[in-house]
Length: 293
Image (cartoon, rainbow, N blue to C red):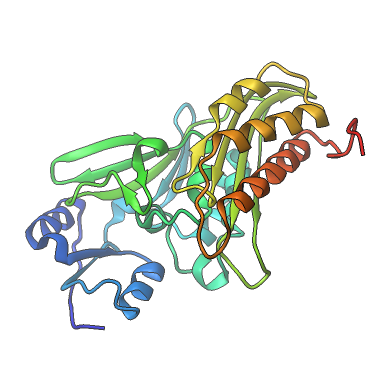
């Protein structure tokens, strides 16, 4: 690991100016779980690390009626998992956060850092996408708000400008009758990055699905909303057969990656099976109910 200068700005504006001045040789550090690993492996060799730990604008978890949850970029995964506000207003997010990576990462890594790294095989982006969350970016030039789909541009690429920081994540109030479930598949118990993930948030009345938001992650270059499957589920009474048909639609619509962890074909079938099980779990069904052997 090469030597670097460590800078500690006290405001978003100061950090933004530092990023602009140093340029591409600077990296922002929050929890540092991914950045330090990349530096030790010599994948990155920045000349300056800009710590955002002193910037109060990036801290805290709050809720405001009509606006929803505000989660500061410096909130750790463990903070989100344990937050009474998150558990009350977005329990699926708390459930997801409690399973991110391993205890060491959950107690050190931050939500903002996770999103900036844009690792396709991680948990928060897909879950946040299904919750219709927004990402607030800021710089010395001001602030802007992007949807998760706008923020995640490509494989390890985000819409962050060189002088911008992630300030907070906003999760809108969920309508009455909304419920969510997040599922993930790990190849082995020792592996902490999912091979595939499914996030489903629905508004329902018993078996009747009024609205669905379904996002697939880990097996695709960037998490993606499955809008055709969402439209298929909306307005239907959900049975095991409907869950299976929705899963078939998802399997048709994804463009899975192929790498050493799994071929595109394997990932497609894994996503199909996981989607079917996730929809069935959300509606309290047996996946075999009403299906032929």
